[in-house]
Length: 146
Image (cartoon, rainbow, N blue to C red; front, side, top):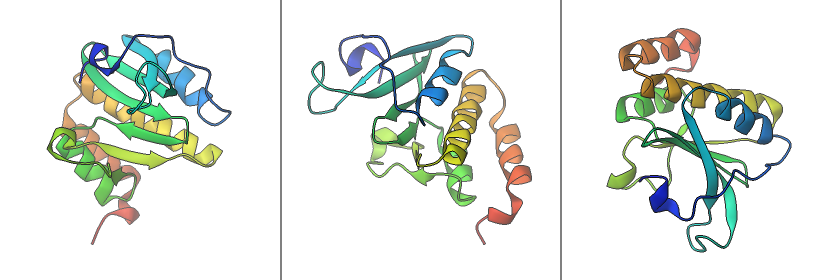
C-alpha cells in the first residue's frame, strides 16, 4: 500500500519514550519518508503511530501501543521468525505475506526493533536477501528453529 493510500499525509507525531528513539533513528536514514500512521478504523481522525517508506515501498510502521510492523519480504520474514526475532503479522493474509511484528516493552526491545527496521531498510536499498539471512543466522545461531 502506498503512503498516500493510507490516509491524509501528516507529520510524524511525537511517540512515547521507548518509540521516539526508534522513530528518530529511522527518520535519519537517507531516503526515508515518514508520516502519521492512522488508526485503520478512523483514518484521518485518530493517530496510531508513524509510517516509514523508502520511495514507494513501505519499510514498516510503529503503533502507539508499542507494536512494530515490518513490511519484510517472505524470505526475510521467514528468517526472522525461524530465529525467534519477530512474529508473523497476526493479520497475515495474502496481502501481508512476509510481514512481521515485534512488541516493544523495554529499552532492549527498542534497540532490537531499530535493528529490525535497519535490516529491512538494507533490503530495500538493494542489499541481497541472502546476505541479510546469513547475518541473522550468524548473529543469532542459538535461536534457530530446530
